[in-house]
Image 1 (cartoon, rainbow, N blue to C red):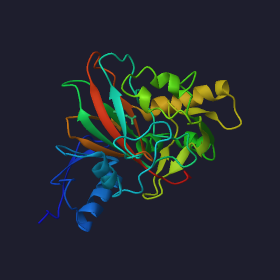
Image 2 (cartoon, rainbow, N blue to C red):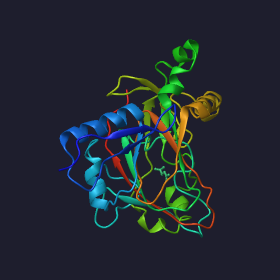
Image 3 (cartoon, helix red, strand yellow):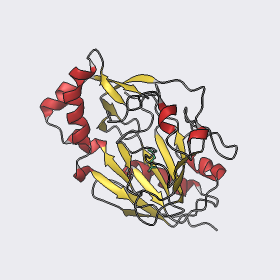
Length: 283
Ligand code: SIN
């Protein structure tokens, strides 16, 4: 008989929590599913240790939070189109996700959440940093909040990839073959301040990786304010840091967080598997 309670252990003051007492391979009661979903809303990034998840099962677990999405740029693994691999080999000089961002803000309907599973990780290094963008918004002055009200940001999938994403991924020997040649660059406009559709909380919704400029402004004109907001959003007090172990599954809420994959393990191997969850139009 599966247990009907979970234990939640907060990771840091700003965000993040470990969930214990759950075997994600097994049958999950409605009560457990609801508790996990609530912990995700309350803590923004939750993680489970010692899980043994196939791509199919990881995609099934994603359904606790919503409908699994298909990532536009990378093919799935083991016949599961929603699950793609994130790999850095000892030969690779760059990583995937090593810039602060919220996933897929260049899509008209960005993914609301992400499940990242650690298949193989270095003994030390390769942690992921997260930041709480609700706190980032709430700690702005009333004057700044007023200025951001109604401001729209333009997000682009190739902001940091001169020559395109394919060229960037060609530098990652474990991932280049998964690139979908047919994929097109994507650009979308979203509010700079987003209201979370489930909690009603406002958060900053611009990021270093994908936000190019403000609508009706040039890149140069946008840069000073955009840089300020992106730096403010990652103040250490708003963050937490997750150390991966093989079998760790993390789930984060892209509507109210950003993350950054640390690239501090040269010459080592790191292999993760990612599934994202469909979201709704930011408002
Ligand atoms: C990502 O940006 O989704 C990847 C994060 C990571 O590999 O830690």
